[in-house]
Image 1 (cartoon, rainbow, N blue to C red):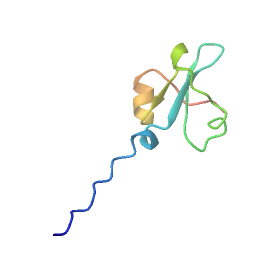
Image 2 (image 1 turned 60 degrees about the vertical axis):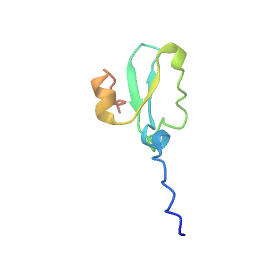
Image 3 (image 1 turned 120 degrees about the vertical axis):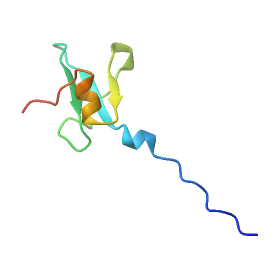
Length: 68
């Protein structure tokens, strides 16, 4: 008897790769993978920073794209 192919779980972490951090001034800014500050941005959940799954989700939560 043949086995059915195993289901591949959806890559939840990869889908939620937008980093939302809070600047020293208190600005809530989100960073997309591949952008200038993405790799050096570290999320501190204890201070209210978080990950988002889409830009729309970040914007709806009151975060903005970086300027410049």
